[in-house]
Length: 132
Image 1 (cartoon, one colour):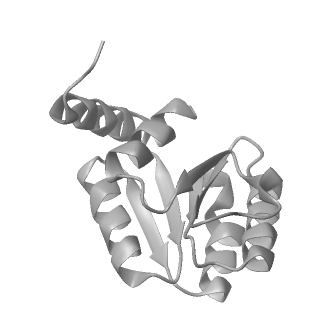
Image 2 (cartoon, rainbow, N blue to C red):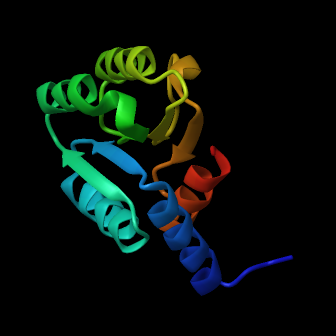
């Protein structure tokens, strides 16, 4: 059965509020970060948005055990993505790592989900909810 965008969005909103989910969005493409942050906040998620690797690591060390997921942008180098993912999984083995990519992605074994950078925001919400 297909749901309209409005109903999928309201389901995500209720789920996020109910569970009090927090998400870390990390990346170097500011417009994409802002779009993801807006979407997630509108759907009830608490969002930490950072555009520096140092800040991302610091937030994971401090709040990793409380985060539902870490979303990594497509411009983040493989070494930073891998380091952050491994650190997050140490802090929160049940947490999810979602990696956006453009073209191809190397060593993505640390990701729970891979999304093409061109994918819609609705796909990000659906992916977050499916990883519960």
